[in-house]
Length: 134
Image (cartoon, rainbow, N blue to C red; front, side):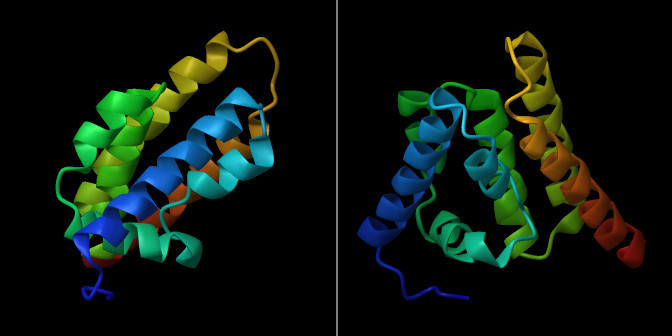
């Protein structure tokens, strides 16, 4: 794990992720959103490491984002996954997925179907991790 990150660098990584998430939703870019909703992807390891360093990440979400519930639970799931707490990761991701699906139902088009498929895949991955430790 990259615990040598500075607090400033961790803050930058989290802010960059939140901006990318917001941009993907605003521009209705389902492919980008799909990659941002993963928990098990190695592409988000640097974000997970940043969450370990910058403990006040919840404040960043409240100040800047639509879909706050989705992000709050998703980052909690990512943090728990990175620290090996797979039951917590599953529970948080399930809350994030439910919040996302509530929003998705209100959108006028199905532009985010790739993200929905990614969420279903991640739930399966997390369930397998939890099942392995029970």
